[in-house]
Image 1 (cartoon, rainbow, N blue to C red):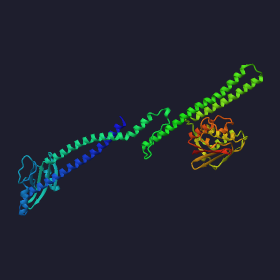
Image 2: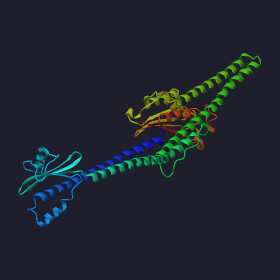
Image 3: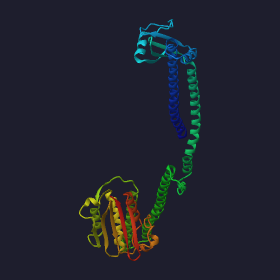
Image 4: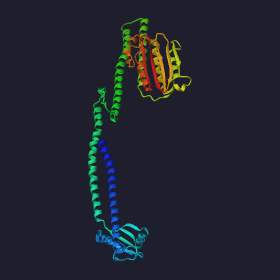
Length: 449
């Protein structure tokens, strides 16, 4: 069942329940009022009969004349009975209709009694007169009132069915109008392919409802997909280029060495070049594997004391104190403040890449690493006094295989910072870079605790 049909049926069902309750309430109220009004007529009729037979000597002449005028106005299928206190019929002879003593006794006890008998309404009153106490019972059929209520019921039934049909049709119209934005979103998403991931869904600038939130969510997904595809294409292109270079160098050295016979020293030089190019190739492959590992959704999380991890990073890349790396802790003595869940190996790689670059580009100048805690955030600062990064290249340093113009003379593949950025983002962290060419660079890492 389509959403449009489901919405139409749900809307119709809800309206049907509410309308049924309303019509049933109206019908019950009308029927109740009919019964009450007819009981009042029976009460009045019983009182008129009592006054006609029993109260001539108690009423004025004008009052009795009014009773004489009302007496002939009988009700439909009216039957009147008068009983004395000994429950004996008087004035009007009993025929087929005989009231039981239980009903007569109830009339005496309750003074006024309303009940239903064989589909007709009946009223019994206890009338006190100077000549004695009497029970008058009047019964009749409210044919006109029942017919009016029956016609009202049929009218309500027809109106109920017609209303349901109209409601269903209106429900389909309104559901189509409500689903039009969703259908438009579906149509726009259907035409988006891998070659058109730069397309975005239109978001209203004047209002912001659930449809706009859906469009924003889809646009964010497309943004991530586009970045992933771009990264994949750039990765493949750059990896292919970077891998060809050492392979070509190895093959060139080997081919040149085989062109003619050479002495031992020349072969040693050739083999040394092959070993260096092979080491470079191995290092590149390891970097590519680490980059691929950072692209994976890694759930191997554990609680990490960032002060211990930073110690390990500094110890690894300072080469036993050969390179001056100063470590500063500013969080006090409570190590729980700088403890967070994460992948220890990946974080070691991320921080190690930055520390290694700081040492490499500082030409022996001191590197400062500071660990701090503020609010619910763990902050790591890595500051060097190296060559710095040009302002127009700061947004590009996290691209795979990208290298700044002033860093070409240093060894590297341009993978480290890209790897670091992916690992930090995997841990819901952020990176801020401040740099000035010739002065130095500061990396600021912020992790939610």
